[in-house]
View 1: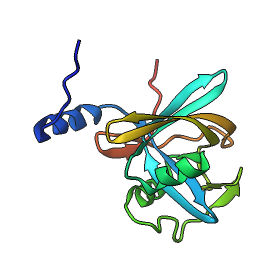
View 2: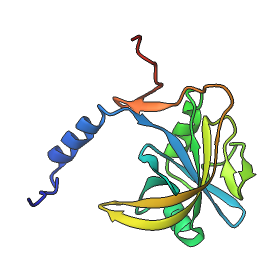
View 3: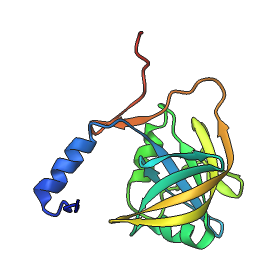
Length: 168
């Protein structure tokens, strides 16, 4: 079977609309360029393997952050909690100064955002081209969950929210 690429604007919008039905977790991927922190909001990330511990993240090919990660081969993944909509919005915008006014601390020599639901540090093993994005397959070298049971920030139907368990 041969796949037919979605090329016209109406087909691309149909894909966006279909994918809006999927609730996605929200995270900020971070890296250091020398001493300067960089980051971007992502919803395309996942656990890949437990043995060895690996994660995957998808970044836009035009992203400055991807260029930095290609040089350093390292990144942080700040899984956002429901109270961090402001960070998700700040890091989703374009521009070079996304960290302006945003507190962070170094962890594993990577920028870590305080109050995140979880934190991972990763070293890239493989870059996989995928259309206008690149998928990074990376080994998790550190992982921590915030104390308690933090509610994650999710993105669904073009709105932020969180997961609520169903009564069973």
